[in-house]
Length: 321
Figure 1 (cartoon, rainbow, N blue to C red):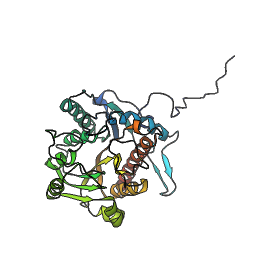
Figure 2: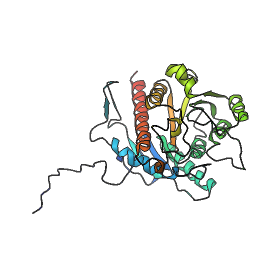
Figure 3: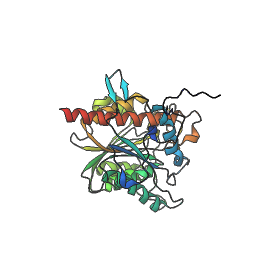
Figure 4: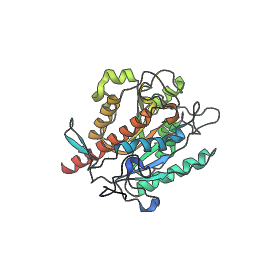
């Protein structure tokens, strides 16, 4: 005789099909009805050193099931606030089709996914993949109004062209600065040996970028960094996991020691959402195979969940005021 004590589907983190935080999957991109939509961009042909970020979306999704709450939202006792309650609709629309060895077609498919999210009036959340996926993600914002890019990263990523490559993971911020609707960039965490030569730094500043290292950001504090972002700007956030110190985020292709710790990034993100309208985001360069503990993917998922919570909590507060 068999017995079952289940009174309903428990939907535990380790059961079922893996979507981001176990949120509903939407296969037909013309039927997106959500406040935010997750798009995987499992592309890493833009890497110059160690590949593996193509498995980032899958790894981050799996890690995110840790935060698939069995109740309405997540209560933060420090903020005395509940984040991502039942009123915030988040869906996962799967991955953009990636054509191996074909950067242009793969990037075009990523852009199509972001455009579908924007057309639905939802917040695009792209999980990479290497940092080149930011190029098509930002291009999709054509016609969406002016935006300012906040990049949190170890590397400047402002190479114009190297070996004929203009759309690799060393190029995205250069390509962003060239977009007519991008009004400027704030680049935070840049340090040590960079993929960009001195002329790239000169070009970045000339094209409207503020550049801060980890040590400079720490000296300024969160409020000081926030002042480097134009007050009325609408913000797109691009977060490379190598912005964090590899002591807590080893699972990436180009780790750089001396990076941020968790709360340094978290407090900046929360401050940005309180003062700015965040219109899109991507998190890139998680390469799970370099971190057998899985902590890098968990960190990435936790940062995304918190950032989404901050965005919608701030929007709700603004609507009430």
